[in-house]
Image (cartoon, rainbow, N blue to C red; front, side):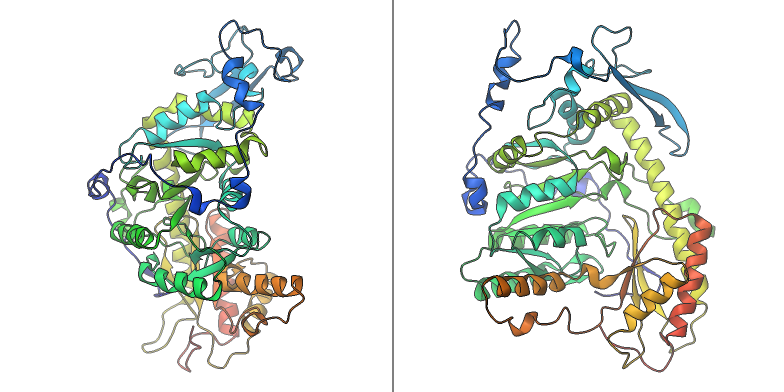
Length: 530
């Protein structure tokens, strides 16, 4: 990945005009899901018990079918949560309340009215695998009614999920058999890579640069896997296009178009992981120019791949973890109906549905805020994360100090324009032992600073681990390419600016600079290449 000392990679302007350049397409009703389905998915059908749900809710139906606990037996009769103010995430205003039907106050919110009353009887009962209609209506109204957010074909829908980690697990079970491969960025989210290995799915690395995954390298990766694994499929690509974890890159509009074009040519499905799009940040500016910052809210953001999809090729995973709170464990998964059907089948007999508490609160919050309120709240989040990013960048630049002409700094980075992370490239001294990054990390921990080693995000590391597991399972010799974790040190650290207090980040950057200098990083004596 290309990196530059304190260089800001400007986000390509993302607006409705740019996104609308893709032509509208005919409905994707003829989409053939079969080539993408696992044996598990092909073996599934709709839950026989949940198939009776539409009959159960008919007016006047005397239902003796479902084993539904009577609402009078529920231990909870109402639940209430205070909300941060739209404009200032560190202040509080109205509350969201979900109460029992017939109670003194059954409406969901204390201020504006909701689209329909939400009740404990509804949200704490067994739910459809797609999620409660009230929650779906609230999500659709606040997030998916805008033409720029919806895909460019007709036959799509979405289901409510437990968040993106659970949604990705559903994708693994639905689209992959053991022995398959999945296209990923060469530095990818470690929890995704850790899910792939137990499923027997090989991460297939594609090169990244300062704008994320490089589309021109996808063909090489696909053909390489298909040649080496003639009996395995490699027809799904996983990507985080905005605020990539761990690198923090943002993929521009044209690159997104190029990626979709390559995927169309190679017949690839795209799993778009979207936890950070609402944390899109302005380009970094020095303190004296920050009055120029403009925050996009939820309008004018970089278009999602889903919104550019004309064929039903994108499965979009969205989570509210970074917007509301990770403990909500709620999000949604959007896709063409032919694929979503199988994802719903899996949901119905595994997690069944997202938490009723979470769906209730989510519905209340979105109905109270509406799209305009969510936009204002997103601006508040973007301001907060921009401040945090700027604190880390300023402290890092100050700690590194002036760099003599012709000398390499101890570390380099690309200033992120979305998400929560700075991806720091350490300029190791030439000839540094392979253990140097481990020693630096331990020294930082000893001095009270925690960063995440970059090697934990290297897709090839997990591919080699799976190769060793597969060889042992077949009682075969480990292939030469899989005998070691990695061939060389990975000189990167991931640093989160999302949580630590300002003063703690400043202190951490001073310690980081001191430790890197202690290990001879940067300077004029030459640095190791990676």
